[in-house]
Image (tube, rainbow, N blue to C red; front, side, top):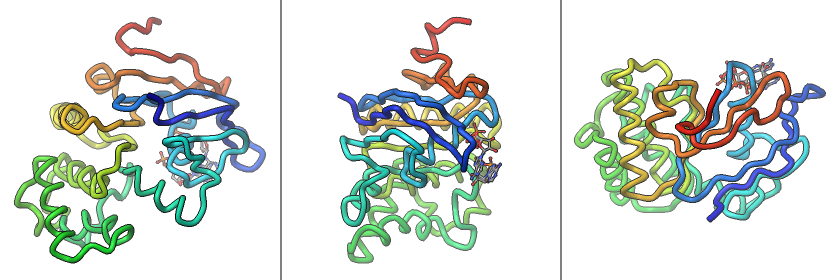
Length: 231
Ligand code: ADP
Ligand code: ADP
């Protein structure tokens, strides 16, 4: 079952085309990885997929809704169906983990305080951070901060999670632990993941399918299961 459909998609900043007329789909429950060298447009693609930018041409459908044209309540509803972990500034340093994880709940729901807090504790526990709700981000290791950022992205139980460079700044062991968490979450919750990374070890561990973007042609250079792709 197709959960994300990217059709005739072109991305440009002003007159500069970054991605030129590409197509791909992501299936429900898949761990889908976007690969490519620095500056090839991985972040640009991700930002379009989460509705931050509008395509120069083409469409991006999330669960059959065009994220670039949805507006008002439809757009809010659609945005609540995707969790995003940004590469930089993942957590607000002046807030506890609980306050960080609560943010999407405050933005998108009218739940009572206690219900929000309960959900936050559950999400922190789900990512292996039970009992840390009162801690500040600066008190945590890099790997724990990533886990907390993933917990926040999952606050609204989105079926799709977008992760921008989840291994950035992590040592290989910690990075492998994040990979394990991603696999566990997919196994237990059936979530769909779209991950931007250039960490080859992670790709072989987690990716069901990859697309590799090419900076020169601005097209998809390769697509498939990383374990069977050659060259
Ligand atoms: P990647 O994530 O693969 O490193 P990016 O999507 O960040 O690539 O960037 C692709 C290209 O688009 C780069 O040349 C970058 O400088 C340019 N770019 C990214 N964001 C903007 C922007 N907001 N305005 C203009 N150019 C941008
Ligand atoms: P990332 O790797 O997360 O895309 P970057 O360091 O490439 O981060 O970009 C940081 C910010 O600057 C992003 O919002 C990006 O869109 C913007 N940006 C990147 N390159 C350019 C550019 N050439 N012109 C204008 N904005 C840019």
